[in-house]
Amino acid sequence: MSTTIEKILTEKAPAPIGPYSQAILVDGKFLYTAGQIPLDPTNGKLIEGDIKEQTRQIIKNLEAILIAGGASFASVIKTTVFLKDMNEFAAMNEVYAEFFGAASPARSTVEVARLPRDVHIEIEVVAVVEK
Image 1: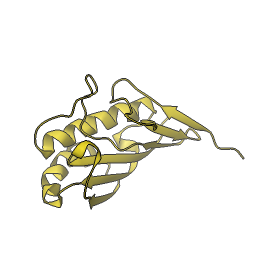
Image 2: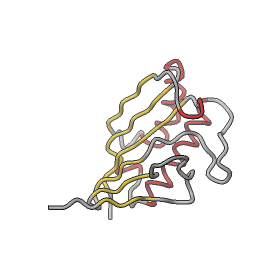
Image 3: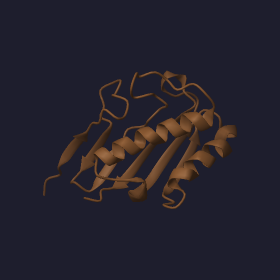
């Protein structure tokens, strides 16, 4: 039994800035996204603003990747949130709930010492493909 692996790439989310894919689709069933940081996909620049604005941009980027891979927020089964400061959890969670509240996927949230480009937040997701 062989496993099929398909790279997912959409121009509606930031292009990878290293040797990785925006997402990987495994056996046409499970979509694993790379961690997303608050980049504007039109110019590759970081979104300025508070944790709410940054979280909202990340989730928009994730939505574009999910759609490109045949999934949606409703099909997300697991998220991982990396925060530079756990004191920003409540504000992040408020925006997160706007998009994932009804689906209520499993989630891990961890505080980390440093993230790429010194951002304050990064989010990755795993979804079941709806195709």
